Amino acid sequence: MAEYEFMTVDVFTARRFGGNPLAVILDARGLDDAAMQSIAAEFGYPETTFVLPPDNPQHHAKVRIFTPRAELGFAGHPNIGTGFILAQRSEAVPEHFTFEEKSGLVRVHLERGLHGKVTGARVAAPHSLELGIHVPKEVLAACVGLRPEDLLLVAHPPIVASVGLKFVIAEVSGLETLRRASPDLAAIRAAAKRFPEAGEGFPVLLYTKLDDDATRLSVRAFAPLLGVWEDAATGSANAALAALLTSLAPGDELALTYEISQGSEIGRPSRIVARAHKSADGPVLASVSGDCTPVMQGRLEV
Image (cartoon, rainbow, N blue to C red; front, top):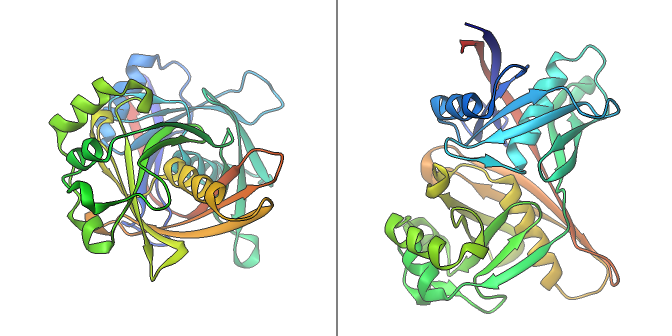
């Protein structure tokens, strides 16, 4: 059997056992797709990453991202956590890493605290904002165990948005409503079959404003068909949310920063900073950033 070194890290938190856990296989050479999927299922984390040599030597690594059930082309917290872990292992820490991923090149900028110590990272989404179909509120409400009237339509209807990974995004009527949400697996399966253009597995992000502040948000994300019943912190979805809200905000030239809380309902509070920028004649671009905390390291046999 071959041995593979791994490390785990909690992302979007400055303390252990909060945020979103991630496992990183530091050198995945020799593992095929089936083995990677099995390892991701064994860890059971929302995502596991596998680090490989890059195809282009000018880049730092090729990174593959797996949920317990499927491979993803891009995700936010796996990139931030992988960048943080690689920085811990590097003798000469660069300003950023460039990763080759299925959705394209991803640049991970390292963030530093006192004395230049790396504390986390910021990742720019690989694509500008892309908007898709509107999902009927009755369908989405059934998927998350809410009433249709619990969904707000003032800013936008439930809509598919992506900056690299598709999510159905909807605003709900407040924190109490957000806390009542619960996935209905049968309804989600039916919606995924009816609306395949909503993204693999019909992943959902619900949000509400805090104190009526459009840049302070609380969110929950569900992707049970991808093996993630509820996510503690979803970088790709929150980047898409920031880009969507910025696209709808008044003005042609605008840069906004969003403070987003997620994960408290499942005992893993997370803090995400999402930024988005739009111009009159250009695309809407987004990024997410957060702190990281290392947790475990070890070896697995395959």
